[in-house]
Length: 445
Ligand code: IFM
Image 1 (cartoon, rainbow, N blue to C red):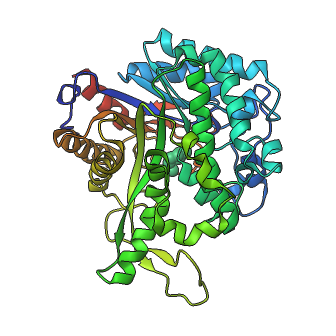
Image 2: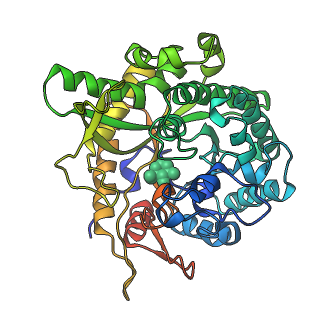
């Protein structure tokens, strides 16, 4: 399958990478890691497909060298990985030397292969002991998170190319405390409002901690979805604006403007913690770059079901575009729109990175390998929108594919395959897919 992009089409210092996260690939049962709120969530019947967990996952904890060989052989410049809080601090307080040693080895293994280590400090596996104290609902999480940041970055921070504190604050706060789809599985507006604020306070506290360690190239990674109203009615337009406010503007506005959008405060203000306005100096700790994780758009309608009253009074409506295995519409233009809007309204000259983009397909291993033409087409059309944004002056400086490996897709278990590399979850054998080979060729050319 021909692929129109090549490395030379992008700016000289443009970074191509692949992304993963600790709980989704490492095999959490190994190496003395502590219990997490994901283990608790998955143990509750009905929360996760087949009750699957990350106990073994891709066994990256053992096979990391083989996986980094794949990153190197694919011609990628950077590896975006995350650090398991419960591996470093199993009870959320005391350090597990084995856990810190693992990230030390992993970092050196990247450097030996000429791969830039790009770390994320939190990708969703909170130590259960801290979840038991209220987790993201408890303001103390900002201190707990700063302590964890200090513990791991005082050891490996000197070798990081870049670090972001928290992957996808919307998922940590809204998806997990209002929609109940991720751990801790709450559907509670007060819990959600507290988490929406504390996640940004913890982000800022971690940035301050790393600055005090003398670290540079620190950023924030936000997932973004384009929101289209289902029709031209004022009701649908307003519902889409509320969705956009909760999903996208809340976090950018907090970090870059020191305020929350009025359209979201209309629903959340009564439920926010006391004196929330006092925390903006920490939340606004200056960043060196911003990461955008992008997958899809949503079509939004006002809620008309009278049995579901109350704010934010909206619902997602099925769209007409082709969909991925996740059921997400494929809408590459949304990436262009979000990159340009983020630069225009929030980040100005600050470098942007696409820190996640990719699709799940029901890939199968055949005798001749794993053919995934739909993923190749997805990457092709999204990279075209990145190019378009760069041509229009948006300072996009890198693009990372989600994901290197098929992995544990949270509440959906192991069925949804996002990898450039197929993983047989019985044998743990890795097989690079045709998308991996296509990108490797493009990066070599
Ligand atoms: O697998 C997730 C990842 O953990 C965070 N971003 C979205 C991916 C696909 O759902």
